Length: 230
Image 1 (cartoon, rainbow, N blue to C red):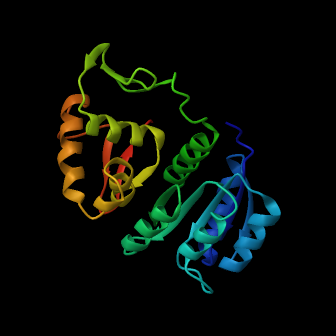
Image 2: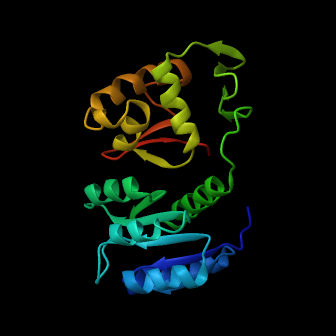
């Protein structure tokens, strides 16, 4: 992954812009700033960036509206910068197509990790039916629909397998409860979050070394789940 990625930062807080203006270039990123949603849309179209950093609380429009408009014409990764109390807005942003979020206040190492993960995911080709995916001791053979833990094949139910492969397809990204329910169970079940809790517990019991303290199939409280790859 190139460390020369271009980033458009859409953020109205001067202190955050100053912080990122200093730190991101020192890690090899080029940064262009916008202080309103409208300016951010203009910058995004003009710069064609590799990634967008987006504050949800903008002075002229909600950040979710920026996501909605951006997603009409580009799949550029979007990492949301959100205040801790904006939980419902974070979920809405992710459902609209944001790739990840970082809660303010954040450290630069956390932000850099989220940026790298989003850029990797954008660069990774879709599963072609013959590929495999590995995390920890787990290997998922997507073409043969087989799952191994330390080279021992593990039986997963069809729902468990679909849940796992959905997380694999979005590896490194947070996937909302609603998105998982829609992709695994279908659009009629998007409000039935108890399905997720039951099947995630079963999946962890089969794949995690310590199911009660999962290392890879992690919970994003109030938002969804993430397959951690780092």
